[in-house]
Image (cartoon, rainbow, N blue to C red; front, side, top):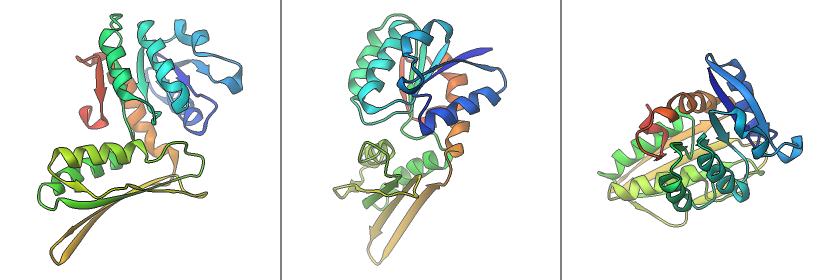
Amino acid sequence: MIRVGVAGAAGRMGSTVCAAVEHAEGMELTGRADPALDSGLTDILGDCDVVVEFSTPGTSLENSIACLEAGVHVVVGATGFDLDALQRSAETAGAGARCFVAPNFAIGAVLLMTLSQQVAEHMPECEIIEMHHDGKLDAPSGTASRTRDLIDAAGGNVHEPIHSVRLPGLVAHQEVVFGGEGQTLSIRHDSIDRSSFMPGVVLAVRRVGELSDPFTVGLEKLL
């Protein structure tokens, strides 16, 4: 049985993660940390094998480092903070804990990113449009930034800036538009409900303790 805690448990993503963990075979929800619940991360760490970190950009780095230093694996879904600092902490914590980061846990979004990387080898010129609900704090999204990095690594040229849309009624949507001589190619993914992220979160919780490296980015590494 994997004992799982959730940081940011009262938020939209955090509450959905809590429900997914409670219904996942072989997992037990042992802690919910959130200021709205009058429960801090230190209150739950001793009861957890893995913490799923879905708080805010301002607290996610501190929470993740605290998990690593306590020897607790952490699955990070929050974005908008310095991943380099988190990587350095993961590599030096020395407590045997593993850190897994995914800019997006939806399988379709991961496929969009990997397909975009393949397309960029042959149609390098492109633009990224990402659209999220009006409560999302960071822009561009972690998914869009990760997509840009993968396209750049394949020799592509993402025209700046990434176009970020924040409106009520949206959840999480991204389109990459490639342009070539006399043609365009568009790849789009839409998450219309937060349940789309849960299979990826559950997979990461199951696998994070098996990772050989202390710091891993990208759900594609687990598929």
